[in-house]
Image 1: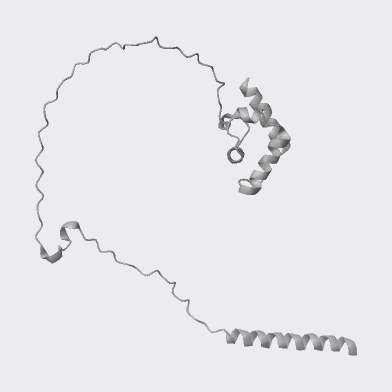
Image 2: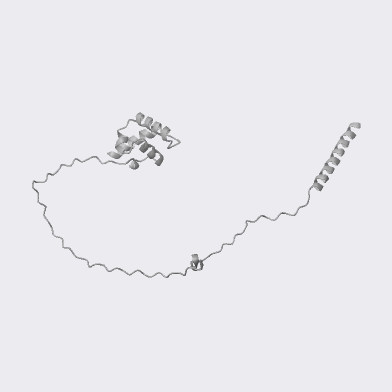
Length: 173
């Protein structure tokens, strides 16, 4: 029985201490009125029109006079006559060697803008240069260029380079 009374005594003392503490904390809080929200200072903007702007030294406004339009001189009509060229020797017709069409790497499918910039930075500007490259050498060149310039966070992989070379060869056919 002594143990049961001791437990009740502890719970009773704890409850009293808790009630006193809560009463004390509640009394400490001062009831303040809610502060007014801060508002941005208002500015008044004064608009001054040009006609109301004070002139320096109180000079009167000068009215602008239109400038006289200068008369245009009469146009003379010149008749063109055909003049046949005179050749001392017969002109030589140069045989034109048809160069293969140079296609920019921008036309290469599968290459995004970052990789296109990386290729250009590495000196690869045409599709022909891509087709003439060995995949390993091109990949090493692109990795070295990317380390120096930092164009992309993800440098191309061997699979990327091989697909570009295949696409370039297919595009030239």
